[in-house]
Length: 254
Image (tube, rainbow, N blue to C red):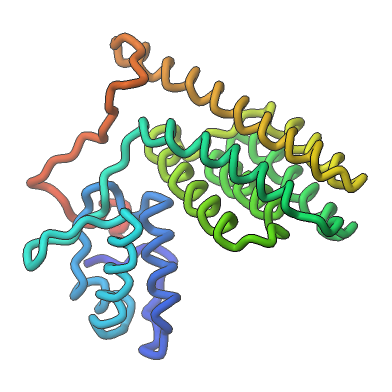
């Protein structure tokens, strides 16, 4: 198996959590594409570790629905459907609003500055047409906004939902579902937090997610029109996969 660009052999002391996080990121960012086979022997050799931590990471990913396994036959990256986003958006606008409403301690000046920095990075990436960078900055902004939530389960579920939405954006929208309007919507949230008005910040954050969902629906409709198909939100848009040709991505070749 060719080693991806920028990935070096890892020491055998690499902890299990790091292997899991690496494979998780490869699935989310599209390095490992939907339906790609994941062979534990090859992955272990690439990372310079034994098969045991790789297998443990694959089991965790299977529990999270990111990996599918046919016992003693194959392990593959789970397919992704554009229609999954219809489930993720409502969860996110409800959970992130709740996360802010439960946050009682004021954000510090440095935390507000960090949010502004993330929002400026988003604006710059959008101006430059850098989709992946824009998606990363947007993800970072939302993590900062909800970082103070006292309920770890809310934060965990929201984090997972945002990762799944990011995977959809990479598979279907060249890496980014974020629009220029997001920058001003983010800023409304920041200004409310600056004056310690968490309730208004929560309302603004929910509005931002609902507006984002509306923009997503417009993009889906455009995809359907480009394909010459009628727009139908209930129709599945699975990625085409050749089951006879599943291997490591060609861009991994050195």
